Figure 1 (cartoon, one colour):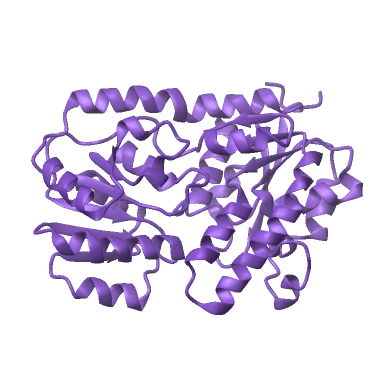
Figure 2 (tube, rainbow, N blue to C red):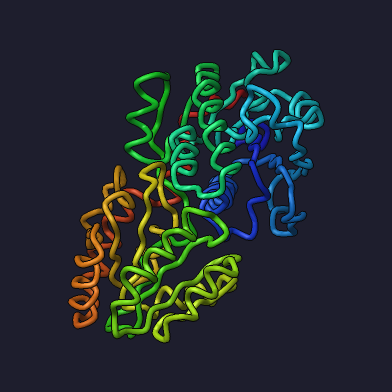
Length: 376
């Protein structure tokens, strides 16, 4: 690639390192893969607590902007996730050249509305159908004012989403999302989630525990962990582990009530991978059938058997690599069955072949490069 021809601005909704929750895993490993493919990445990060990261200096350029999360940013018809990421400094940086721009999520698409950038090629990585995602958060939220915020945000996001008509292209993360966007917008391309693994690294044999993992500071994941502890783990005479970032005091106390349940808070990357690999069954459930759950990829690349509910694999083509069960009684029966089975080399080869077809970082980076108009 010619050094002057292949520059790309990427606007990230958060600092994408450490790559320790779903959205930033996708961003970080996409940036890494594009750099390895020869793209000169100009990375623009909205910072609100994660700080500047040395590893991101591998990019051609890195800029940080403070996200404005003040209450006044909620007093607008523009969604808060977008309004809180408006930045004049960002626009001024983008105006210094005419390189194409990739917005990470609907969150960073305020630049599509800026007339000064109307002649730029601006693409959007859609991480979710956001209004569906926020409606789901509101439907399950118990706190009154948070429920109101999520439902208001869902309404604003549905109203705001047609801004995508201004995008030069949309990179959808799942088949289900791609089908949704194709009904309303042009140049929709399916680009599955980027991840840390290049190949399946599962171990053969058997583990002796069941694992649920996720960012436990996210209500959806906390609710999933609580549901599993109360309805599945409590009925098993097996060691069950829950692991993830920033669990609430309520979740910690719930886990303590059951002698067979261990909660591992804030594991580092190496510890999390070890937990995934040593488990016999990785169990994952969600009530949000939107986007792609990157923790599922993590479990499939590193773990043995994966037990999921139907919503976890909806629109992903991964159901054939998982055991699917929705009711607690089914899950309990499947766990007991899987605890008696060896995970074999044949299981690993079959999984690796299918994962390479869909989730190969190199080929997915190539899809993006081929779709973007790089000016000579």
